Amino acid sequence: MAESSSSSPTEEIARLIKRLSAYVTFKMSSLFSTSIPNLDSRSIGAIAGLAIAVIFTWRAIRAPPGEPRRRQPKRRMQSAETSSAAVAQSNLASITPNDVSLPREDNGVQDVVDQFFQPVKPTLGQMVRQKLSEGRKVTCRLLGVILEESSPEELQKQATVKSSVLEVLLEITKSSDLYLMERVLDDESEARVLEALETAGVFTSGGLVKDKVLFCSTEVGRTSFVRQLEPDWHIDTNPEITTQLARFIKYQLHVSAAKPERTAPNVFTSQSIEQFFGCA
Image (cartoon, rainbow, N blue to C red; front, side):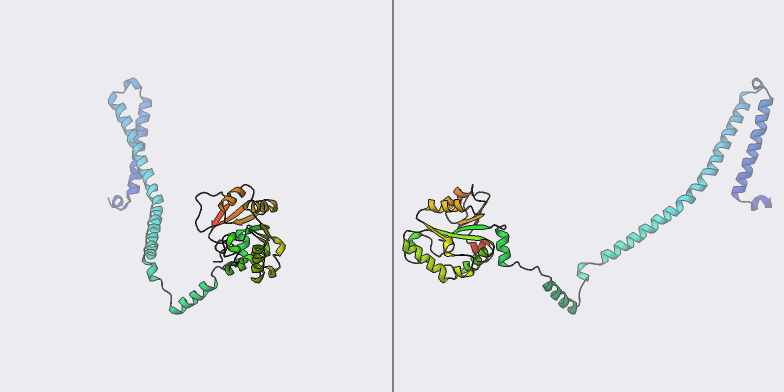
């Protein structure tokens, strides 16, 4: 009795299986030694039930003990990972933008760094070349664009060059071949325009000469000038001329205070060339 009480459950189960195996062996030997017709139904049923009991007992003892031992480490790992993730998430949640602050000295340094790395504003020359898409030839009318006056009749009295346009003209002549043109009613108006341009210093930059200032007596004549010169850009204030030239000129700038309802895809609109090139 002391031996059975000190033995483990596994040893007891092993002894039970041995006893069952011995009993099954004895019964099987009896079965083969006795003719089957002499066995009754009770004996056959008892042997079959005993064999089934041994099989299920062996499976129940052998299979389950190994599975929990293999799965327990995984469960422990999952629980550890879950706890670690929970701790990390709680730490992140505890840090809010309001909690992050810099000392005053660091704020001052940051302001200096931000100011140093601010994007550099492009120069007027860079903006002119960018807007013109590296166009090599530009034609431009005078009235309403270069001059303060807006009609040929006004030119019979005076001609005044816009001071705000001079810097833009200088940059255009640096990168493109510029031609100015206008319709005038008499020779005096032509001389007056040339004198105003010279006084404003338009011809002193070296990119524009008097021979590139063209005059005509009709609007059709100005259209002909443009088509003959075949510029990359034409600048005008007359919407009819802009529409006529849209099929022949690559790009156009229509200078007007009001944007027209319909324009061709290659026609841009601006209140002034200074505004178009970012100078105003």
